[in-house]
Image 1 (tube, rainbow, N blue to C red):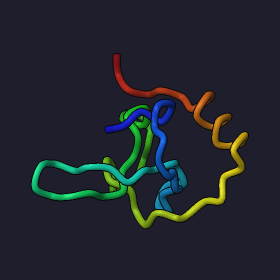
Image 2 (image 1 turned 135 degrees about the horizontal axis):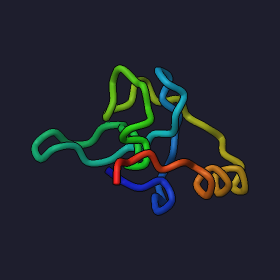
Image 3 (image 1 turned 60 degrees about the vertical axis):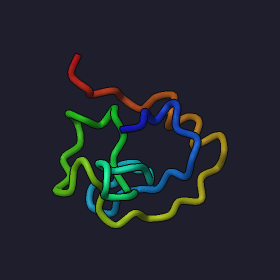
Length: 78
């Protein structure tokens, strides 16, 4: 799983839970798929988690996306 603060590709929103998601590599042999970020591990209540539901494209303003990345809570258990 990618970390939202470091991710440089397209970020969309999961239609199922409303949280950010990205297109990334799945388990070996399964190609790519839309999935939730590492920080969402223990804090996203999505029936598709760790995958994402239908990804909705976002027209992010550059500043808005940077702000989301900067303040997104990290719920991964320590």
